[in-house]
Amino acid sequence: MVIKEKIKVIISDLDGTLLNAEHQISEYTKTVFRQLHDKNYLIIVATGRHHLDALPIVESLGCPVYLVTSNGARIHSPSKELLYSINIKSDAIKSILDLEIDSEITTVLFKEEVWQTNKENKKLNNFQTIINYPPEIVDFKFVEDLSAIKLFFTHDSHRKLMELRDRILVDHSDDFSHAFSLPLCLEFMDISVDKSVAILKILEKKNLTFDESISFGDGFNDEKMLAAAGKSLIMENAVESLKNKLSHIEVIATNDDDGVAKYLTKMLLS
Image 1 (cartoon, rainbow, N blue to C red):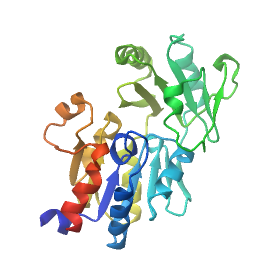
Image 2 (image 1 turned 90 degrees about the vertical axis):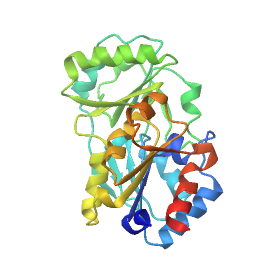
Image 3 (image 1 turned 180 degrees about the vertical axis):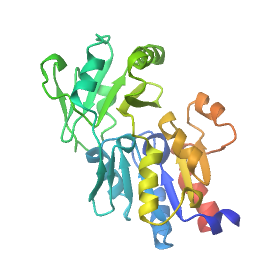
């Protein structure tokens, strides 16, 4: 089969893709990825999560994985060596927080060791099955160093987050990259940051190309990654607007139905 002969790299998002609704990787998926490693496929996990949050998750796969986190602001090798990092400068973040953001919106700064937030958000806390990256509630007006890996906003209204995005981009379109990892999660990173950029750094290190990769995702922070890969798949549980925008890309089973693992079994292991 053409795909089987061509593919050497497997790239996957975590939330909504490898992880099920309980934010866990199923035992079936773990078994499949170990088999893929045994057949010498390079495995890259690319997520919006912080590396301290993502590391124990990818470790549960039981095989070596290159890890791209915070949408590309960090790259770690399978041995946990930090290969690349970039932060947003404090003044840049301050210029956004000075916009007097609606207090109903949860604001988060992804720092190196903790994530600072303006309020407790139980939905956000539920994403962490292992508390490896603790929250710290702060008043951002009194935080001197606002530099961070990522600036994150969440609210139950996608419309409200869209309005905030548009306000920020009026004066900052050249300063930040941004993405909706989920409809209720708006994320800002340094302008140079994107999953696809970080993945390319790994591929070049391994003398491989995007054409030799297969990628899986479900969010708008996966868009460029999906566009770059030789073969791309979108999860059935992805938002309809993303599936419509990338209508040329095949849709596979949901994350709760082990869509990634089942597809890889059929196309690469059978």
